[in-house]
Image (cartoon, rainbow, N blue to C red; front, top):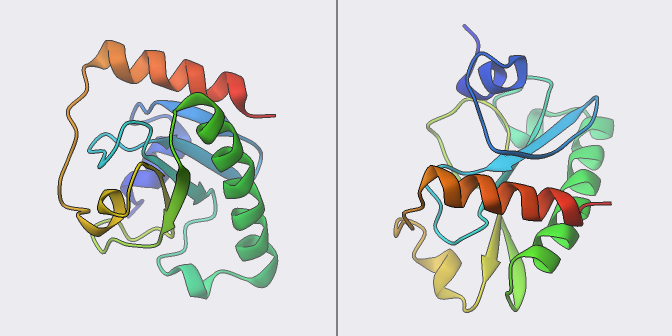
Length: 131
């Protein structure tokens, strides 16, 4: 059975996509801990990050770096934090979280509410900053 993220990749489920290439996808988390919270995934469906083959693993991190650079330009923050967390979706993924303080990662269960218009404006702003 395809994971939720695989359904996003195939277009069966909509997402606020900020970057995509033939192997990877980055999209806004719809339950963000901070404005701009982005998920970065391989298009290859593998449950556990460390089960990815070396090429996909390295490529995922290179893609995440590119997204993080654009994210930092688009969303004012001190740094973009990186976290691998989550058991709900059996698809390897990296969280990129704009940080004003360590609280933004340490209190991961605290969520920010955004409207659809806010998500779409943020998606466009981040996507425009990714080279």
